Image 1 (cartoon, helix red, strand yellow):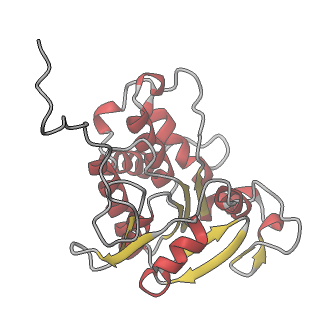
Image 2 (cartoon, helix red, strand yellow):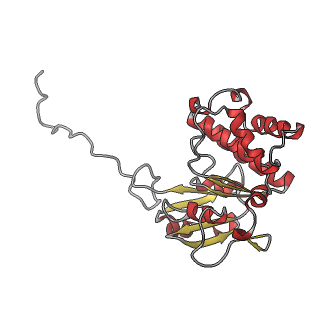
Image 3 (cartoon, helix red, strand yellow):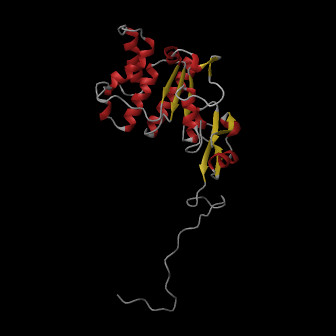
Length: 255
């Protein structure tokens, strides 16, 4: 899901996760009304990573990731070998295994984000809802996380729904784009079918050039601003004012 700030992307995601009740209509999970299903059953099928998750004060990384196993445990039951295996694998997949014993409070924003993603992975749900999962991550970790989510989709069949602000990464990794504006769906479909200069203008109010990404073969958007635009692209590319040159016949100023 892509769109400008405040268009309703996160609200829609929260509605899909049963955190908000729809004013009209229903959210169906496997054909059944989501709000009528037991919470533990839903938690085994649907995982959510919100935009601003809050960790309990002082909790260690491994303990936080381990909370993703709660929906799979019976009351008063101890952890089994599989629980430890899944947590270790989730830490390893997100590059956070070396942080396992550190308090979450001491981590950088990017490290915390990867830990939260590890917890979502440890939940082992059929559906993952992620609200801006690449926030705070440098470009290397953005690609690693998106590659990991693609692996989950292709190898385990996990359905992944994400809110993203980077429309180029969204177009590269998504099978299906939903473009929103003012709480409404403006366009939906495969990135190659809907991502156009007209769509960017309608959704973001921005002039842009859309071309094929040479690395991925997917659509890529280059915004047109008032500055740093190649000549002929329709935006002013004139440099700033030049220093005033002295008249040809004027004498040079004295030191």
